[in-house]
Length: 119
Image (tube, rainbow, N blue to C red):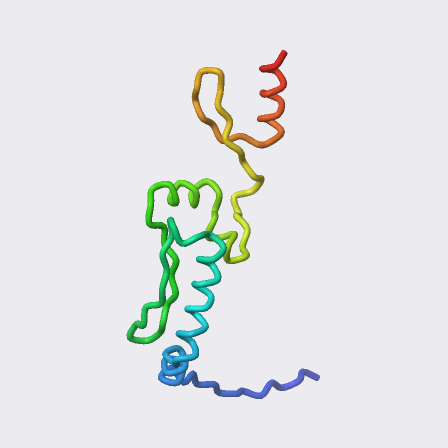
């Protein structure tokens, strides 16, 4: 005999969520997380803060120099500072060929090419 499921109605309290997202404690928690990330990456090339929007507060950390943009592109500095890992598969390294071109290759490939250069 099949069991009968009871139907439960659930209604989200959206104004309550919006109110909770704008509490002063949320701003303080976001600012402390932003400060923690800035401490890890350094404040010379990065800037951050908390913006209070209509429905929620948002913390942000951004690059302020071209060098920082390049570091973020190649090394995922901000992602690592937040505790994440790049999801682009195996780690790639920069390798300069004999012709002077820079390529992104696997560490094993770079080691093999470097070895062949020495001989």
